[in-house]
Length: 495
Image 1: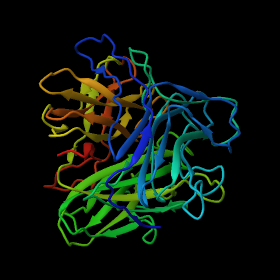
Image 2: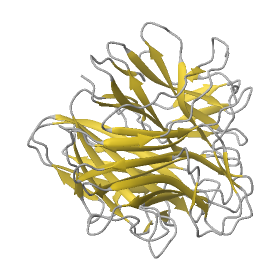
Image 3: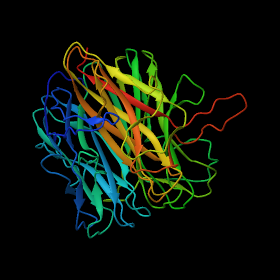
Image 4: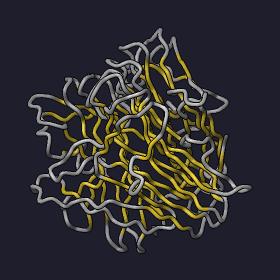
């Protein structure tokens, strides 16, 4: 199914935000800011820095993670589409159990659009692997686009369960940091402002790709996972792919990306990420890869989901977890065309952090490299995301990815969101991690955003990495490119 977003003028979105505590941290460390109330006709955000523990899951029944704080109520004034996003650190204390994260929607009265589509099932979900590794969080992300009817009230909630009956081993939220807060668990609803356009497609099939050479990206489903689009104005196109990736055979990782034609370079790849299966089997990675390119007006572009193994592989790599009610976790491709006032900074190198003390958030790149920002003449809201392939060469250490904010001329760095990526049991197994923040911007003030990282504990002489690959295979005279590390900014109502 393909949908195209509708432009809106005014809506009512009600979200709940849990405040964060501002610790008396050392100057060398990022401090946390209290969560701002979001005032926007286009974005609502429900966020918590608590840690959650699910007990007694029967492996089938979805439960609310936090029915009070992780929910959004929405009243639609006109027929419209909404992008729903879930972001959480999921992990298990006992191997053998995976963690499922879902976005549940309820509301509407027939003959209008009514949810849920299937009773007891979320509209989108992802499975996070813990079959082989314990205490190794997966920075899971799930995204979907749904249609809503005018005059109807809908509720969005984060839900979860285990993949099979479990006495109580799974958790959401990693950490804690020095202030006692855990990594953000977040539900965000985004409407489409005037001048923006959205195309999306999804498949609830399961795919098995085998016999690859480790270099050639293959289309996953040319019929269901391809989008052709054209805009009447020039701007920036964001390409977002979201999929559960896993392998039944240890030693092979899974690469997924978005290929676009026409494209300003010879690879035609807008973005790609590598999901780890080097040490763990049947452990899905709820992967998300985001990229962007400038586009020309009145030009037809085609975007397709493509995948491969990280090396020659006679065995299949798998896409889609489950099934539930005969359907697998959805693989989605979303294209968002926005005006040119967006931000996107990217690094195609492989980044390395040595000797982390487990507390201090360190730059991921040169001070002028991975940075984006916004200054608006009116109050507005921005969604900021950091996307990186994180892995370790030594088991026992996890990798933390954060977003820091600076405001005005004050150099103080404030941590506004973070995720922990697991490497406790597996080495050289990248996690296609994504962390998202929603920020209220005050008029006539410059805001800067940068990714930061650290290990989850002190590790002298140990190293963590961002960027998988390289790909394509280096040739004489050609540069080396790794999976991109990037920070993006989408403004809503800014001018």
